[in-house]
Structure formats: C-alpha cells, structure tokens
Image (cartoon, rainbow, N blue to C red; front, top):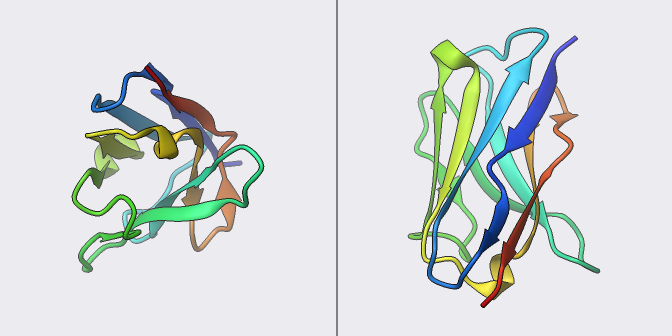
Length: 114
C-alpha cells in the first residue's frame, strides 16, 4: 500500500527558504501520475499550492507563483516544493497529494515568523 510521507518543514524567518519533500513509500507513484502540494493555515480551509504532471508545465497558485517551485525525481519516487521569499502568510501545514489516487500525506508544519 502506497503511503506519502512529507518532510522538510520547520520554523523560518520571513524572506527565508525551505525545501519540502514528499516520498512515496510502500509502493510506487508512477511517473505518469500528477502530484500536488496543498496547505492549510490555522482556522482556514486547505488550499491548493502547486501541481506537477508529466507533459505539462507546472502550475501554481497566484499567491506563490514566482516564489515556489515544484519538481519531482521519479527515480526516487519523490516530489519537492522549493519555497523562497517566504512570508508569514505562508504558514500552515503542507500536504502532498497523488492526484489520480486521491492519496494524501500526513503533512509537515511550516512556520514563517520573526
């Protein structure tokens, strides 16, 4: 059974950077699968952040476009989210999702604060 495990979250100052990872374990996420990152801020609904799909350009929410980069390493069954120029409003729990499978990871906390 495939599981998604996120890591890389933490506390960072405004303007800083973090790199999140999402590893598929216990199975294999095909290189044909679309993968996405979502986030959920305290007291708010989960929102879409970015998607990467084979044969298509990555897509980003307007709030992160130009600051975040989604990528993947199919040989390691891993998806990444490079987050630069972080802002306090980027704070939240970040989740990865295997879109076609409807499978979610458990999330990793990102806190942007001085």
